[in-house]
Image 1 (cartoon, one colour):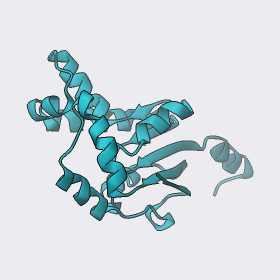
Image 2 (cartoon, one colour; image 1 turned 135 degrees about the horizontal axis):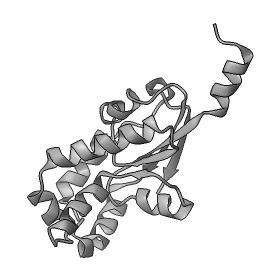
Image 3 (tube, one colour; image 1 turned 30 degrees about the horizontal axis):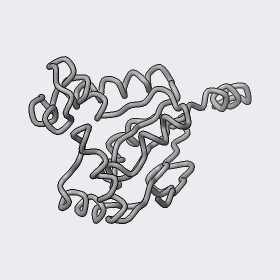
Amino acid sequence: MKTLRGFLTEANKKAIVTFMIGPPGVGKTTYVKKEGLKNVLSRDDIVMNHGYRLGLTDYNLIFSKIDQNSVNKELNSKFDKLVKDGKNFVIDMTMMNKKSRSKFLSRIPKYYRKIAVSFETDLNTLKKRNKMRTAEGKNLPLNLLKQMLLSYEPPTEEEGFDDIEIKKI
């Protein structure tokens, strides 16, 4: 049985994990930078770092050339270390549906406060932003953007989130 001191100690230890949810180009990473959030877990960053080591800077080209299993292994290793160290951190990935979020939510200890920041937008806005991402090689085919929007499931408390913020873009 926990004592009052045990409860208070646990409450003071409450770490925070923030899930940035939304399709590519909606503004998740821009929001993270603007807010000055630290300890950002981003699959895109890992992909780009692998590319830089190969002398490549075009995201789509890098993505096609590197071993995705290696990227996933590194992503999971970084995630596990952040959790083990009890760090506040941000997961900056699309995570458009419950299944994709559950892969992380199921591995986060109860003492973490879980926050979802979900960016919702329409296809026309995504098309415009997708064109702007051409310079960095991160533009996606229109059918993939449509597919992602159709797969979107808003985050819920039933999934395990303590707080949910929806941003309409």
